[in-house]
Length: 251
Image (tube, rainbow, N blue to C red):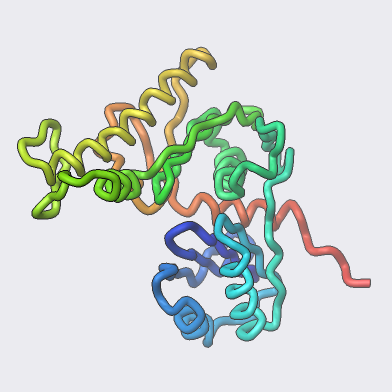
């Protein structure tokens, strides 16, 4: 039994996995009392043999989670960091450690599940885009603000853009609230489609487009390109990593 942890910018997601059987799972936002919520959720669970984590947050929050894991299960967290090559995936970055481990593990999951060649779009606080070939070569990618962060940035940097009600996504907006929301969400959709077009030209054919992240479901219908959801890609990648990297025997 393994406890898998995905520490994202907005929330932490977790799952208990035995072999390929997925059991209890949950999520907690960082603006909640994370330690209390996790301790309560994990109080009646079986003790895992291993705890593996992927993190894009600061070390203080990693330390917080390590304390909860130790208190609940008496285990240490095995943090996965981005390598140059592993699980059949080869990173394009000259400095692989600078690629977010969430992006790496999403590619690991896609490669292991025979979904490549593909484009992986993570739609959350940030928008991340990565292209992966059928043989596991990462071609590179892009990073931009996610739709909600884009809205927050716009409102924080302007004096007169002050919507007086929540906006809705429309093709053409006739009021400020709708214009802000529609512009930001459509900008993200357009960038994904532009990236997909460029990769297709470079690779000689259309790629499978996989969406994950907290805003993936909302973004999916805005795309003209054919796309599909690939939920929990980081956790699925962690499970593949765990199988490929068994714990070292204690001396």
